[in-house]
Amino acid sequence: MNTLASPVPPVLQVDRLTKRYRSGERLLTVVDDVSFSLGPGETCSVLGPSGSGKTTLLGLCAGLDRPTSGSVLLNGQHLGGLDQDRLAELRNRSVGFVFQTFQLVPTLTALENVMVPLELRGKPSRAWAVELLGRVGLEDRAHHYPVQLSGGEQQRVGLARAFVNRPRILFADEPTGNLDADTGETVIELLLEMNRDFGTMLLVVTHDLELSGKTRRILTLRGGRITSDRVPDSLRPPGQVPEQTLSGAARDSAAIESDPA
Ligand SMILES: Nc1ncnc2c1ncn2[C@@H]1O[C@H](COP(=O)(O)OP(=O)(O)O)[C@@H](O)[C@H]1O
Ligand SMILES: [Mg+2]
Image (cartoon, rainbow, N blue to C red):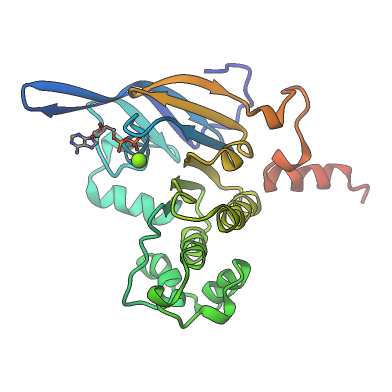
């Protein structure tokens, strides 16, 4: 870990995480001694071939799955010490998800899908859900069912749903994997724009170099191990932080500092 990093505590800290499955007589190591940490608002992609353990790693980080060994600290809480109810509570309060296959509830309208996480928290605000649907450009699709929406529209509903609780943490598993390039680009722009505006930490599994090139950091997995941990070429040199990579909070504080009033 970088000891010169700012004193802000990480939002996600993964330490020597390992996941093994028994396959007949053999033990299969799917995630192998993985360690990294991400601070508030940080963006990080996970690249790697199919079967390299990306989805498993995401599930472990989100507490959807338990590691064989190692630990995950998520929003200040050690996941290993939480039972299923506490894990669900932590996810509802602090975590958003975006899936490759959108995972909308087919019997609910776009608006009702966006409201699901609010209802799980007991704070249903129709006006806020409508506002978020507007942000992703779907105000006129609020009462459509998923089957009446294109893939790109469904994923935009998925984004509105993921951000509706203003999560500190967002996990996305191949969010553009089922979309054509143009539609994917719209989804990427919206994802990164909301990540900045809400100051959300983003860990995103992707094959999309367009997307990974826009995150601050890229981890590559092979056979469950991190084989590379780098800043994308498009964001170098590391000494110069391009303006668009600052989180919303960082931009706000920069604005406050330069404000003479
Ligand atoms: N529940 C499970 N039981 C056994 N093997 C699993 C299980 N889940 C995943 N695997 C295996 O772990 C490996 C990594 O899977 P996954 O994390 O889905 O990879 P990726 O998302 O990088 O394609 C694969 O070989 C997969 O077959
Ligand atoms: Mg996967």
